[in-house]
Amino acid sequence: MIRTEAELDEALSRPTKDDVAAMAALAGDVLILGAAGKMGPSLAALARRASEAAGVSRGIVGVSRFSSPDSRQSLEAAGVETIACDLLDRNALAGLPDCPNVLFMAGRKFGTHENEALTWAVNTYLPALVAERFPRSRIVAFSTANVYPLSPIQQGGSRETDAVSPIGDYAQSALGRERLLQYFSERNGTSMAILRLSYAIDLRYGVLRDVAEKVLASKPVDLTTGYANVIWQRDANSVALRAFAHCASPALVLNLSGPRPLSIRQAAERMGELAGVDPVFAGQESDSALLVNCARAVEMFGPPPTSIGEMIEWVTGWVQQGGRSLHKPTHFEERTGQF
Image (cartoon, rainbow, N blue to C red; front, side, top):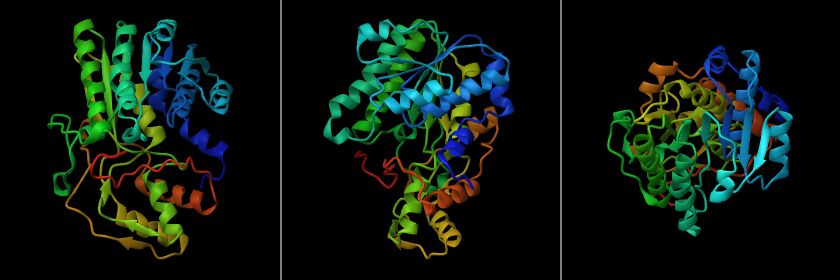
């Protein structure tokens, strides 16, 4: 059980021996753009802790607008230097320090249908600005599995070599992000890795949190999208740090999530078993879902160390005890690309 936010934050930033080895081998400071998002604080803390465990003295710099002072304070408490910056401001971006290692995490998803233009600016224009600003850096950039179409469940998920077919403005703009990064990678010889992430799990948000809240409140769990790929947030961040060693030009593109799809029905049933309640279901599983095949990532980095069973137990216990939520539903059920 993870009972407090302090325990959760420690678990999310606890380095593995592979993280320590990666930070020992990496030369130079690390600049994290979009460090105040859902994953940024734990990634920054993981980089700091892994570097210290490796005996390496380096700067970990988190950049964000920091609209919430708490997020900036938590980063600084973890030994991360912070810089407040509107990344869409060319002059402010130019004023950032040069850095050999850049983690690009800035992105916009929810609220897209209310302001499509802003989503395109953040997801497509901004990556081009960043690639222009840091042509000599190694850049690890987060993207999304939403660039793929829904695929048959039996197929086992889209591979990196499969055709992309993004649905809706968010997914289309995310593909725009990838294409602009790939363009600058080839034009400038910038070494990059683009990670197509599918549903990182924290106890305060994520697909499992969405399902657990409904199970424990005896609300119907929609089974229309009956499967999803999920990965413990620490494990996803671990791959991001270790991906610096695999940056290349042309850019490496890599699916990032758990090695096998999660059954929403089975997850809800297990949560009900743990909590002593009977889940309520609505609808039937469709024969397709947004799924990715992560065999290449497993080959490169090994399977994620945190199992789906562990995540289900942690999330169920967290929701049972009233653990804090970020109140940011994933909308994993969405099948028409409207976010």
